Amino acid sequence: MIYEWEMKSSSIEETTQLAEKLATHLAKGDVVTLEGDLGAGKTSFTKGLAKGLGVTRNVNSPTFTIIKEYEGKHMMLYHMDAYRVEEEYEDLGLEEYFEGEGVTVIEWPSMIAEQLPQERLSIHIQYTGETTRNIVITAFGQRYISICKEIFEA
Image (tube, rainbow, N blue to C red; front, top):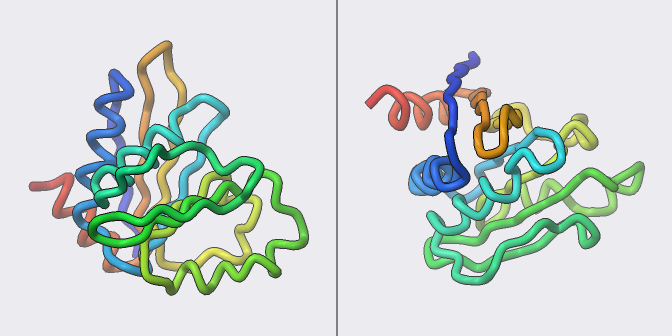
C-alpha cells in the first residue's frame, strides 16, 4: 500500500517546519529517505527533523563521513549521505541503524536502494525557484501512511 502527498514550500522555514512537525510523529526504527538535486533542501529538511526530535547540536551534511549520529531529547537521529557510497555499503551495518534506537534519514537513497527497508517514508524535494520547492512525500507501508494521513489530512 502506498500513499502520496504533494505540497509547495515557499521558504526554507516552511520546509523545516514541515519536517519538524513530521518528527513529532516518528518513532525508533523509522526510516526517512530524501531525494533531490544539490541545494534542493535535503539537509534543511533534516535540520527540521532534528529540531523536532530535540537535537540541539548543529546538523550539517554528512557528505564525507557518510553517517552522523545526533542525540536528541526524544531519540537518536542517524543522518546518512549515501552519495559517495559504493559497493562497501554492506560494511556500514545499515540494518543496525534501520532497526536502531532512533530515526534514520538517508540522503541520496537511490545509491543504496537494495538495502532500504520496504516500509519507509520517501521525500523528494524539487528546486523550483530561489526559495520555492515542490515536496512529494510517498509513504510505503501502513505505519507511514497513518502518519501522513494524521499530518496532512487533519
